[in-house]
Amino acid sequence: MDMEHYDVVIVGGGPAGASAAIYTARADLQTIVLDKDPHAGALGMAHVIANYPGAPSDISGIELLESMKQQAASFGARFLREKVTGLDLKESEKKVFTASGKVFTTKALILATGSMGKSSMIQGEKELLGAGVSYCATCDAAFYKGQVVAVAGRTGEAVEEAKVLSRFAGKVYLLCPASTFNASPDLVGSLSNLPNIEVLYDKRIRSINGNATVESLSISGEDTEIDVDGVFLYLTGSSPVIDYAGGQLELCEPGCLRVDKDFSTSVPGVFAAGDVLCKEIKQAIIVASEGCLAALHVDKYLRGSDKARSYYH
Image 1 (cartoon, rainbow, N blue to C red):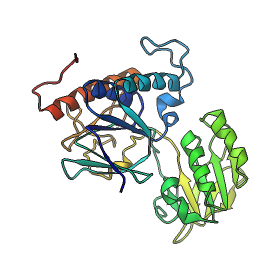
Image 2: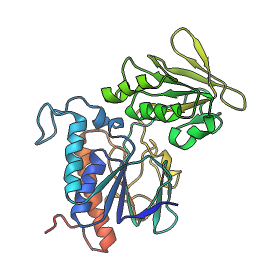
Image 3: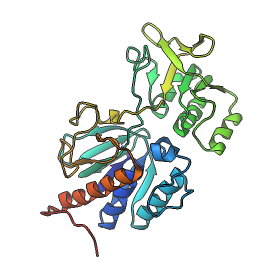
Image 4: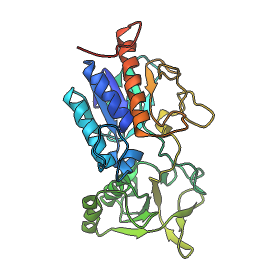
């Protein structure tokens, strides 16, 4: 097992996670940020950000994130493209599991994965989960060697996962629910080099069909049905992304993480910031400030201090 230890592990590289990394790294805490796809979050999808203090009026969300990332990296924070698939929070030393098989251990964990999670289930999704319905091609692609699968989503993550599946499956349908992907042109253009991927635009899954396993999908358009052996879902919504926590953390009624004033969750050593928390107003500057506060309280927690330090020499 490939295992690495850090003082602080941050899950999510959006404005909350990146801001937290600036402060933990500057506090001389060995910090790593695990982010599945910078383009998949709300800020990464924004074409123009005109109201972030100190930023140019024509900066894109991904450019603003890159600036935050570079600042955190200048203090020693490490950023790694990894999809977190699970947590083990039973011991004081927390374990973070990723799709690539790596395991990260830490005494302080900050969850900042945002709220782009799917808000509702597709008909048949819950019933066939684990029997052809998956959320991780990197984890399950090898089970579909030579078979027909579908990937649903319009983010860069969906495109990349379709490419992973193309190495195993005989045929991959990539169902984009809009007329374009919210991904870099180079990434989308790379699909043309993979003849076993067929891209279908403006297609939404109406139902996932099958008895014991996935057999077909009913998709929008002309009441089309396509036969598949599996389907991988990368659809976004407005629900907090906390499925990887496996029910180990206390939630508020709307489904977001419950935290105290110091941004600590129900498990000691686990903190949270950003849109995984309940809030009426969602703005990059607000979640960035929460990332800062969570980081300061993490520093206090690790050092056993009476109060959080607001600056470092």
